[in-house]
Length: 504
Image (cartoon, rainbow, N blue to C red):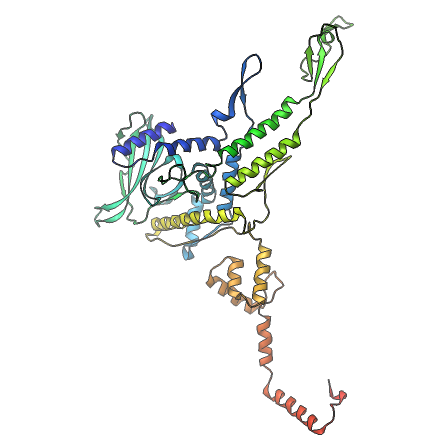
C-alpha cells in the first residue's frame, strides 16, 4: 500500500506542477524501513541445500538497526530535556502533555533517524485545541525547498472513506492570498485522492478545502539526522543514520546467526545401532521401544557390515568465545558507522547492552550528539513558535536545555563550579546558572536567597563567608584602632617590653 500511495501522490503532484523527489530516495526509505522492522526479505530469509532438497531458512537477528535509533532518540529527547518559554511555559507544558509530546516526540526522532526524515505538524481541531501530528518519512512529500530547507510540503496518509480506499493529502503552501488582508502567508489545502485512479475526489463535508493560517512561518518542522544525504545530494530529504552502515548491520546478524546455530547444530547426539532400538516384549506381553522415540539425544543408525553394536557419542565443541569476540567486533564497527564511536555497545551473556558511563566531551559520540542537537533544538523552538501562534495569535520564543548528565554528572559539575568560584575565575551567578540550568534572573533570585540564608541547602559550601569576614573587619571602631596605636607608641618610647600579664 505504501508503494501505491507514493505513486498516486507523485502523479497528482506532477499534474499540479510540483517537482517530485526522485524515486530513488523513497526506494531507500523502503530499504531502511525493512531493516528498522528487523525483517529484510532478501537477507533474513534464504534457502539452503541439505544434500537432498532445498530448505527454507530464517536467520537469527540481533536487531541493531532499531537499537541504534532508540539510543539516538534517548540521547536527544529524554525526560531531562527542558523546554522553557518564560511566562508561557506553564501553558506550553499543558499543550505538550495533551499531545503526549514526551512519548511521541521521542518516537518520532527514533523513526526519523531510522528513515531519514520526520515532521511535526501543528493545527487547530474543531474544538480549538492545538494538535501536534507526528509524521514519518514515507508520508512526507516536499513541494519546494531552498538550500535543503523544505519551505512547502505535503503530508499524505492512506485512509478508508465510505468503504473506499483514499489518500488524504494536506498541502502546506506559502503565498499571497485574498482572505481580506491580501498578505503573504501559509495556507493549507486539504485534498482527497482516489487510491486506485489517482484522481481528486470531493472532500468530506466537515473538512475545509482551504485554510488560511495567517502565519508567515510554517506550521510544520522537518527533522533529519544532521548528516549529508550522499545518496541524492540535491534531495531535501535526509538519510537514515545507518544508511552507510547496512553492511555492518548485516555483519552483526550474520555472526549472531552463526553463534546461535553453533548451539543448535552442536547438540549432543548418541548414535544407536538400529538393532538396539528394536521393540522388546515386556513380561505382561506389551511391546515397548528400548529408547524414548521423542528423545532427540538419540539418533538411529544402521549397523555396518561388521555388525558393530557399540553406542557412539557425538559431542561437538561450541566455539562460543570466538563468536562472542566476532559479535563484539561487529558491534564496534556498527557503533562507529552510526556516529557513536567504538565501545558504545557490549555483548555479554545477557545480550547487547549499552554503555552507561559518563561520555567524554572529546569522544565521537559527544561531538556527533552536539551536532544533532543543533537540528533538534531548532525544530523544537520552531514548533513552540507554531504552537504559541495557534494558541495565542503570537509566536513566542523558547529555549531548549538538553540533558548534559551523560557528559558530566551533577556532582562533578558542582565541584568544578565551586573550585572556579573560590579561585576567582567564575562568578557565583554564572555558577548557579550552570548548576541549576536556569536563567540569569532566576539565578539572581537564588543568589539573593543564598545571601539571606548564608548557605546552600544540601551542600557544605559557603560562598558568602568571605564577604561577611570583610564586613566584620570593616566594623572595627576607629576608637579601638586609635587606642591600640597609642599603646604601641607608649611602649616603644619607654623602651620596655610589654608585660605578658597585660595580655588577655
